[in-house]
Image (cartoon, rainbow, N blue to C red):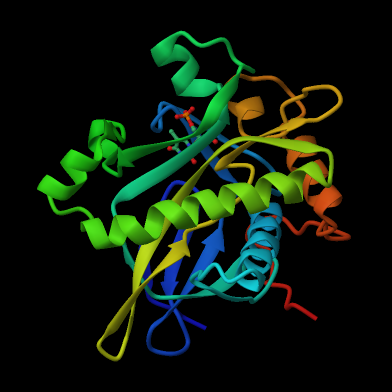
Length: 253
Ligand code: TMP
């Protein structure tokens, strides 16, 4: 079946979906870091992130967090609702790591006094700069009403996912969310979009503090594929076999 390709990102390709208002998200094995300066492949990542994100979005839906997720189609694709992506990445941090450690000189692993929210403007050419609510409002990237929905949702997602991951022996250090505007008739709702996976979260093993996320790729720590598989295994969504990219799509049973 030929489908119209709408957009190709660093880790996913979006195709026109089967019904109007739907999109197919195809998960690639490609990985980038530091705004595309480092590139590589993590074999099987697309399959694992597709399943992990499906699982987390469904669990969030079950507690009433609206998402764009409809259903998984096959090993590498999921059907989602078409939304207008808000060009802001919302990062929630529980423990210092990555850019906050570097920027503010906080030792990695320091528990933060409370969850900290940060905003980044989605603009590859600029390397996704950090921005404030002032910038967001002044440039109209999101309205204050949009933010009034996004902020409590991000904190709810944080509380819920912190507990969920703790239940499988992982500490949710930080993560990034994207939101979209979903139009139904003349009504607009803010929903969670994109994906939630070890590409967009930092997850450390509770006992060993071992990094179980994309930091293994970013900093060449080795056992990258194994970390993604282990996260999927702990969540109970590790597939029996992981088909290579470009193989025939395998339908969901
Ligand atoms: P940071 O410490 O590099 O700012 O990253 C914070 C969190 O956001 C981390 O879990 C990784 C995630 N993230 C993305 O998903 N996409 C990005 O482009 C960046 C910079 C971070």
